[in-house]
Structures are given as C-alpha cells and as structure tokens.
Figure 1 (cartoon, rainbow, N blue to C red):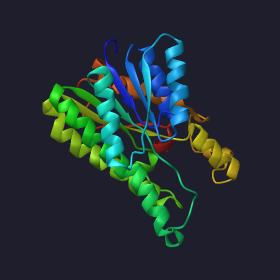
Figure 2: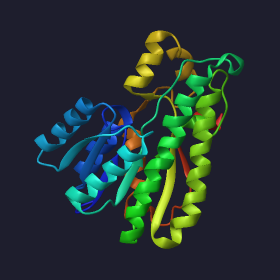
Figure 3: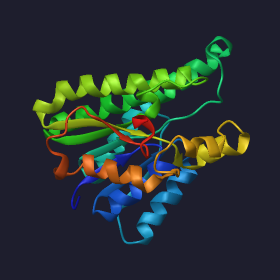
Figure 4: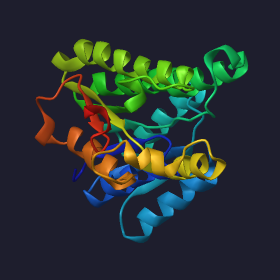
Length: 249
C-alpha cells in the first residue's frame, strides 16, 4: 500500500481501528474517521507515533454533508482515495420484531445501511475521477443468515450485501473493485458490551464457531487489506465471511 491513501470509518475502535493501523503498517496514508472525534484522534496519534501518516476526521455517516466533507478532507490532504473500508455500524439489544420500536429500527437502518450508501456515494465520485480504487463494506454474518431478535440489524446487513453487489457490477469496468466482509463474533468493544449486558452469552457464541473462539479485529482487518490490495485484483462483488466457520455449520 506504499503511496496509497486509505479511508476507514468507525475507525475509533474495534475492527476500524485495527484496519486503520494495518493500512498504515502497509505503507498507506490513513484517514481515521469516527463519530467519536477523540477516539479518532487517539488512533491517528498511535499511527503518527510510529512515523506513519494519518489524520483524524469526525464524521456521522448518516449525515450527507459530513460524509462529503470527510471525503473532501481526505482529497485535500492526501490528493486521492485508493482504498475505503466502510466499517461504521451499531448493534442493538435483541428484540422480537413485533416489539421493536420504530425509532430504533430507523437508527439501525440509518447507520448500518444508509451510512454505507452515503460513504460509497462520495467515495465513488472521487474514485471515478481517478479511474481506480477499492471499497470494502462491513456487513456481518447477519448479512448471510437470520437470527432471532436481530431483524432490523440483519435486514440492514443483508442490504449492505445487495448494495455491494449492485455497485460492484456498476463500477468494476471503471477500475473500482467493491466487496464486503462478513465478520462473525469478533472481540471488539461493541461485542464486549453485549457480553457484559447479557445480550450475548459468551459460551453460546463460542460453541457456534468451529474454531472454538472469538475472532480478533486484526483478522478482519487482514481480509480488508487483502481485498484492497493488488492480490485481490479479480475479486468483484464478493461477501467474504470472516467468522471462524460460523456459517458452515
């Protein structure tokens, strides 16, 4: 990734942070974006402390003007965007679909689906000018299967995969490759909160994975880096499960 520029949303923690750090280690200049500006700054400082290039940008991915500004800032500072990991997302407590509040449904869809669309919209405008680029959208195993209590989350994550496939078909011939990753249960602050609250029983989660453990954020980041590298130059519109075997059993 030497000489390349990578943009990562939700980069203040978890998989986004791991991806931002890994892009920087691979030689890219990184735009660390997160709705939590202090968290974004902390990750950018970690990268800078190792002599690598990064800037922090506050961005609420549900706000079109903030997303546009994020992309403009990346281009203003670094001149281009070669790779983007649209990672920002939320989980919600397990709720039967009949009991799900409309406001919570809208919040999940706005961040997890509309946010991905807005990021792709403005990233692609820049990548079209360049004639090149790679985008990876963060879906979930929730984009591949259904589980009780997670209807809105799974609907959004299924939507991410549909959008990824359609966009990939539109832009592959223009030199822009678009794919998705579908993480399983990964050790992140978001998952830890679910475990701590009792929303996700840890023992049950581990039993569902043939590998017998939770995933690490760096393992998802490694897949993202690969999809944005020349090694994945013939991979188009795919949904790569990084799930310890969850979806094969």
